[in-house]
Image 1 (cartoon, rainbow, N blue to C red):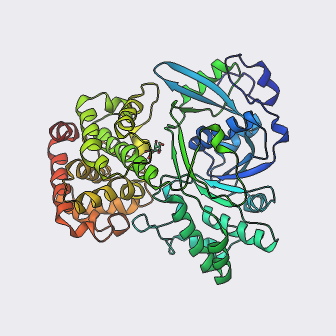
Image 2: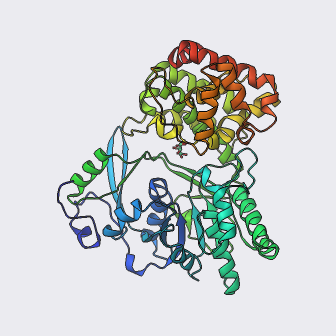
Image 3: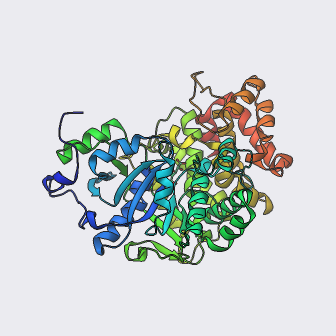
Length: 493
Ligand code: CS2
């Protein structure tokens, strides 16, 4: 990085005129929202909405961003007074905007007491989360708290120094209760089915395990609206940092890069109050469920299918994969013939338009969204993205060939060796177990599939017993080993 000055409050005024910047008094912002899991997604999504809201009318909605473990975001943004650039890119070009709503940055692992103090402040009315699927410490197949999770056991034993988002929220709520303060609303912004109901169930169970009274209080008094979040935000690259810094004339250690599209649908249940989100394009609704299923199945289900098959076929990014006509056809047909027909569309939504827009978004050549990034944490993602649509298809007596190919591609991927025999860096909370299974199968597709079906936390106990699911999945897996992903995609598309 050249020795240019760092982006910060004092040089905001010197930025080139085309760079949008916070049009409000940042100093006057109280912390109204604590966000757990401050990362690229939240900075390009929720924070962008809050920034737009504050620009319309300044209010008590400053955001404190908490990282649970890694100090990287805090280390990058603290010297910048919490400021960072959001670069919105597509084939037409790039727009830069400096976002100003992040007013405090904390690292929970370093100072849990400071995070609990923050969450127990009277000004805090909402706690939002993007901690990824695995951050909920639950069984993905059932949505129930995993009571044997080592971090959950730790947090139950030592509530004043938690490690998990769940432990922090419940301890902060207990402190608010003891202080006679109202509880905050908990808003999950992760790609989980019924994310609000899921976090409510997990919080209630965790609180109950701490003490029955607290459990009852959490169950009765903490609102957890469901929400659907959508914006594609690939990991920032060195090239992004250099390009954005050059355009600013000052250096930004961690800009975020995203697409023009953004959507946020939220259930309107905020007893402690909320920002006037509807004034900046957030859809406030009574029931998020149809929006969420549409997005998880059409966007994320396609994404995971692209990620595993594309990676195996040697494609580095989503747009590279989608530039291959066989893949583009497969994904369109997956939506048209398998996932789309399982949906009850939200009021006013146009399925064809939504699917067309997704294909354009996946093709966005200005984003380098790595297949490897999306391939992460498959054990946490498969149930809602591919397996639930498979259940619905089977219940309707309909074929699942493309969905099964996606599942088989995940199985092939988690062997940890690609089609050229090169190692794959498989990131997953169950990675050690997956590696054991792969080693024990000795490269035999049937044994591999059989052993992976035994992961009840992923497949439940229904699908592994249903030959209408296992047979096409095993067939696809055999073919992936024998013919390679590109050929199987072309033949299945
Ligand atoms: C992706 C999502 O990494 C992944 O699993 O499918 O992060 C996806 O980009 C977002 O959900 C888009 O809203």
